[in-house]
Image 1 (cartoon, one colour):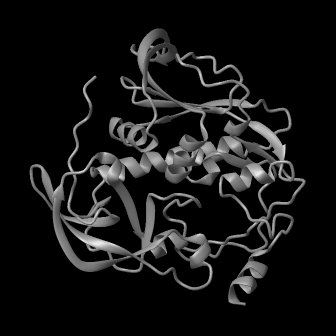
Image 2: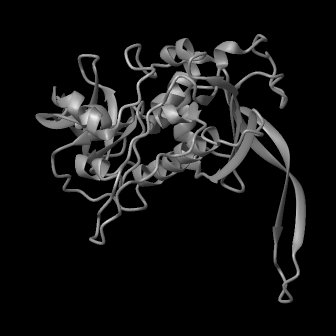
Length: 333
């Protein structure tokens, strides 16, 4: 199947090299055949208080403009007004490097047909689904889970380029059902369909996965969510938050690729031979993405070094459980 074509739109953001070889974020002003006119943006110091911990890096526009060659689809990044992020109307997970915040008003409204909207919608669903699977707190769960989400060809292309993994062309048998007659009879179909597979089972690729989907895509805590002590107000846009800390004896599900006992396979096989990792299996004809997650269970105490290696947690407060009030007090001090 041919690679999907795409076109940038004014108002979208890309992360590319400038004329000095520095990686910078730019906002697209106009699009020509093979070039785009951009306005460069710069990293801004994060706001005080919780913004410095709970929000991504901040951007602000500069007066620099440029004309650059049309970049690849994986250069796309997503910039949102900080109010959308701080009120949880846009999903952001710590570790995502493709999401930025800004205090500036974004005048251009990107339609649902823009590639930024299409791709970020899929990124959001992938991030939510991986967090749901890895945060499963059932004691009898296995160390393997499989789930599926809808995924467009553009989002798959973006994911493949961002992760930089080898794409394996393969076939897989799938089963689905439909109703084609007026008598409510159900037809069950089993078919062998083409699929594309990328297997993530090495540390450098897992770090790229965190850059795209956040740290909840590789580790989840097996404990109930904290209880809400406040009621939600009736006014529009209201929300209540409560933070639940992690303690040393808490159990986590971790995609522990450093503990893989066998060398990587030279030839792709469906059976991963007990290796931890993630398989993304894209079915082009169904626009469906199956996710196979292979992980291990640890207590936080046993996994401290593994978590630090992924940039998760710190040595000072691994055994502390801070409430929202304590966190705010620490930030003010």
